[in-house]
Image (cartoon, rainbow, N blue to C red; front, side):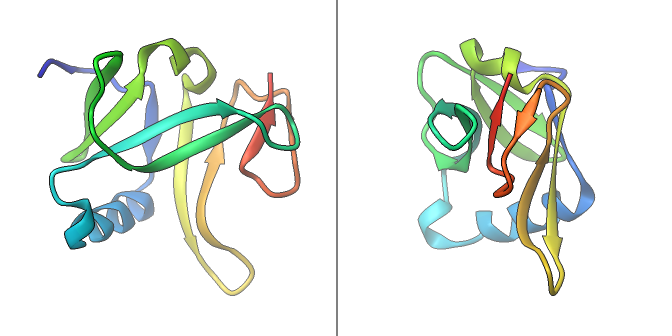
Length: 113
């Protein structure tokens, strides 16, 4: 497994803490954190964030001790994106700050370029 030194996305300290907590769950042992995009959603593309197995087309990154995989063809949509974890009364969950998004929808998980 080759690890690329510089990940195209960053995780805030709150996101790192939450992902590491989730990595401890039995169903996530031996899995990688997949960050990506797929077609669909209100604005054309939706974010993918979850635990998965590594595929041949995936690039592997290490972000603060978290093994992160991304499909190399989708990196152009995610370059420079910051993922954070919010745990407040009004917002709870992962949020995405993507400098490549020209439009976003109200749900925060869909964007257009």
